[in-house]
Image (cartoon, rainbow over all chains, first blue to last red; front, top):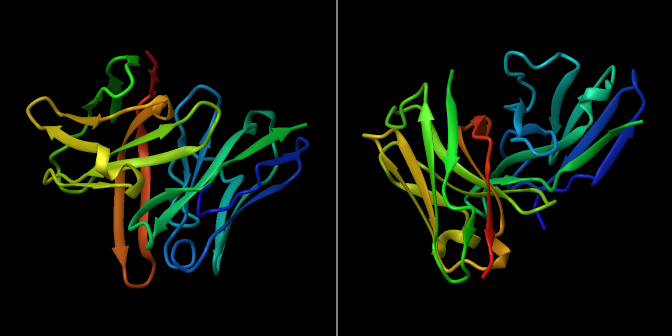
Length: 110
Length: 127
């Protein structure tokens, strides 16, 4: 059971916008920045968003991140079939004195 | 381009030690601006930090695995390794190594991310 709570699943149709949430506390999301990863089946995760809202080069601007208080969100606009993957949030946790991942959200493109 | 690749036995007997190596190319593990970490993923489950190594050679471990884990580096080979002792079936999973960026500011707290990952290696603990 992670200290970061993500919905286990999310879905949308092509072209729609989808938001995935990551809920924590003052000792993690509320006090530190959030990172998002995308993972396709049988592959390593890929960095999607870091420092709450920054995109590494090569990540489409359809992906955006935000944070407010103890919750963070990953928004995907113009949903495409290739966006179907697992998404993980991550941050630092003061109680664990180290980094932590959320439980992950499986995104299905209908 | 930075590349990482995990290697090690795919099968480990219960109570034995799991030993994995991550070979890094395109970057030096002794450079001062990055850390080097291990993450695992149980079959069908989410990601779990194991720990990460500082360029100095010191390491940080997630509390639940700290007593059984050792992460160390070999700068001459540009490799770092993970040893996890007293394994059980609960340690079965895919193990990833990655390059870690870690910063702290009074304004934003800690910012941590992995920008390069190895493809992962599946380790099964079974007799």
